[in-house]
Length: 121
Image (cartoon, rainbow, N blue to C red; front, top):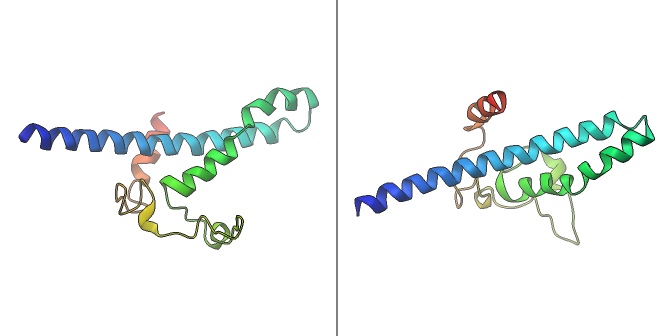
């Protein structure tokens, strides 16, 4: 029974860590590919080279906001309407990393850790 207790704690922490890093990598990837796109607009050859790096990146960034971490972008995201539904207008408890039904991390409590991970990476 002790093994189950300690193993479940270990698995929970590893899964949480992986989820937090995974979400952070999607955000970093979005920022970097947006920068590549902006920096290569002046040259058709460079723009063509950069185009494959930008495919599906924006949707992954939105998926992070829909599934993992409650976005704190104000009313902008809440006003998005997709076929009569507002995907960002949902309970804060339903997000995998920050929601009560997920890992239960309060928004902002992992900021220092993520900043440290970003700097060290």
